[in-house]
Length: 282
Image (tube, rainbow, N blue to C red; front, side, top):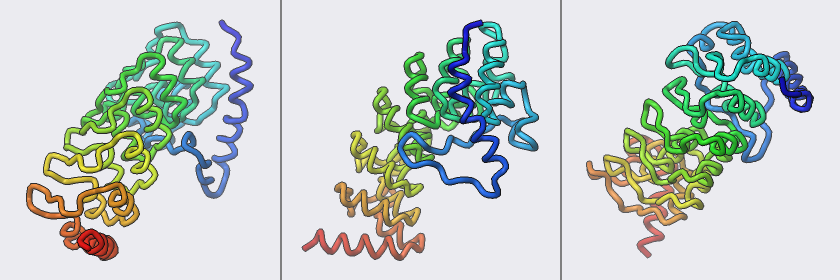
């Protein structure tokens, strides 16, 4: 067995932090920064109900509980290619999914070294890359050959999932690794549309900076600005208009962004769009 004492020592503070967090009366806010983001919230079906620590193998329980030192020990005890390294049943997350969702790149690398598949399918048919919570985890998975364009059950790539979940550091790492910022999901939404729909302003800024087209529409002709207007996100609409979004563009059904804001009852967004149109017409 290879000496992992350095890794155990490095992960001990994380395990202690997890134990202390479990005893706290209220959750601490996530730390600031691109690489300190909440993980995608998918879990295995067994863990979704009841105590997550009681579901699955000891390794899965250690990863769900973010007990790093224990996870390292259990991984080292596995034979290469062990069945425990991949999801036990279809539709459940395996160890590599959970490590990626934790965002801990050293454990991700250790699992890959022991034989975990970077293309294993878990909850929502997502790969570990689609569950990654940090840019560091993304880079580790990509270096091991993970497909940046692998699609889940909804036709979403890891970038599309990250855009919808506001995982900005993850999105930056994915685009840096070759992800296309202008791809669509099965429903026709782009990363920019998904971010606009959720009002993720910093994600919108990142995508625009990295080459996302502000006018690239969905299958019904809906633009990112229309998505922001229909969702009632004035900050998102402001960023998109500043980036040159067409105020007069229409969906296939004929509505403009202003029409959608009005019909959805979003008065603040409608007022902003009316003022923007007035400035444009001067």
